[in-house]
Amino acid sequence: MTEPVFRLARTEDVVVLASYRLRMFQEMDANEGKNYDPHELAELEAVFSQHALPRMDSEELVAWVVEMEGQVAACAAVSVLPTVPAPGRMEMRWALLHNVYTLPEFRGRGLARRLVEMAADWCRQKGFGSLALNASAAGRPLYESMGFKPTNQMAMKLSPRQKEEVQASPG
Image (cartoon, rainbow, N blue to C red; front, side, top):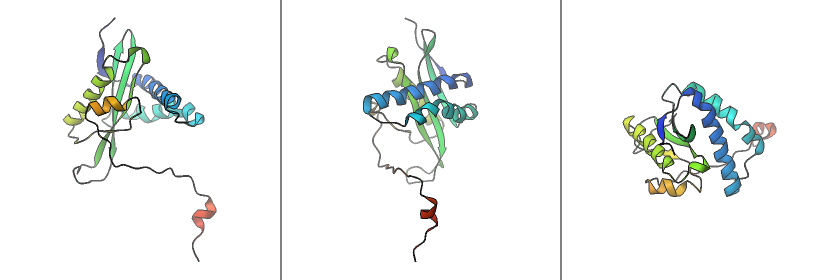
């Protein structure tokens, strides 16, 4: 077995990052019954690649990969997103950890943990006071063991309103 090689992802790795992002959601759909829209899943790789490619050479999106046995065994990424200030976070940006994925045959070796540590270290060096993520049920134990805590963030699904509803006004 070869030793893992951890490195920053390059633009040519976007294809793998996109593919692993799709695999991650497919596994969550199968294992957690997420019932994702199959049409969205079919578009996911292309949409992610379009988003990631122009951002890879900036600090808007930074990713890491682990190479083992001649292939990318795992990956993780951080997107730097604009936000508004809040108590305890006065900077106008926040760090979102995503694309943490390990191929099944390489799991249980600490690769994801090391990638998350690398991402957290990068965020500290860039002056971020926190790192956020959306965790799958399978990933939650790892993140909790590393100090991630649930937050008070809530979300609401919005469906498009009919044109008539938007134009209607009371009396």
